[in-house]
Figure 1: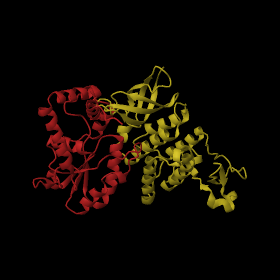
Figure 2: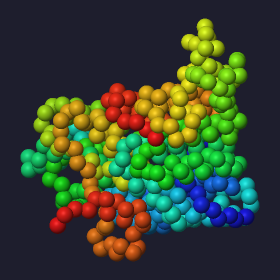
Figure 3: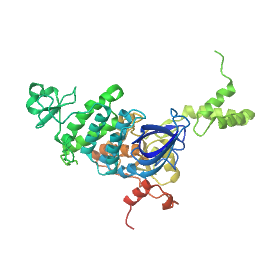
Length: 244
Length: 198
């Protein structure tokens, strides 16, 4: 068994003194683990940093085996983000979320391409695109948000809430007495290339986080996502940024 | 339950040490067993003494026979400059380089989402207490150039900023003796970003 493909490093766990069990995300193979012999060595340590885009090669005798991984660096996203606190927080959160919610060895091409676009833009953090990527993750996982029209009236205007059960949008007029029980829908989430203020980003993260927690064992989202949330909350307090 | 074969037990214990596989553990055990008076018993005594005497320094987290450790007690050291390191191994590496004349603070790990290590698992609060005491003027972050290391550094910068101390970090770039064509792209990019006037 063998494949070779562009892949994004999601996580690397030490095995022995110099080995790493690496988790990758590829377009065709999905989230796929393998053993990188000598991966923690001085020569290879920089390669297997989370967020890096590599050309990966996986070899095993049988498909169900862990297999051996090797790779060459294509885009050093981790190195580019190291000095950018927000970019690094975004990179860590995206890798941790993909690692936490995507099942093993099943293709999720939209999640891969979205993550690829996120890391390509680093060190500048595309925060609104990150929230949209989380919404796309939900769609690929089968928890998709339906933000096209109001679930109650069918209108496409003035969509302001989302049902926490069904994930369907609700207009401000139809929300009525249920308003307090619904999740607020930030305007940028339903529209591409619309800028978002930090407080809108937080609303978006709360919305996607509510549904993503269902896909995580124990319904606890990764700490890295919490750190990204905290950094954006700091920005919201400072009122100093508009995301893109 | 029968007691384990002492030779196999010794090999098992040695094989758990870093740098030892089972084969090298067996070789070391055999060498000691062939010369018990000269090699084995002195080693056992040294291990017993070290286990009893060595512990973490209450001020910086370094391992020493006394607390505060000999680095913290050294009057020649500049107590205004504290170098923050991941672990004792990194502290020893910096000491071997003879490049730092200040004191240290051992964090005891890195923030890691994967390993579930949060700020409360690191020695952050004792560092803040040291700084609040007023003697420290500069904190050098000597943390790994990894995603976890940089995440920890950014976290510490946020926590240290209100104190007003100067926070610096180690440079990243071309190693001594390193040729550019064999460097990885990430290191080259970092070296270019961190270029300085000459």
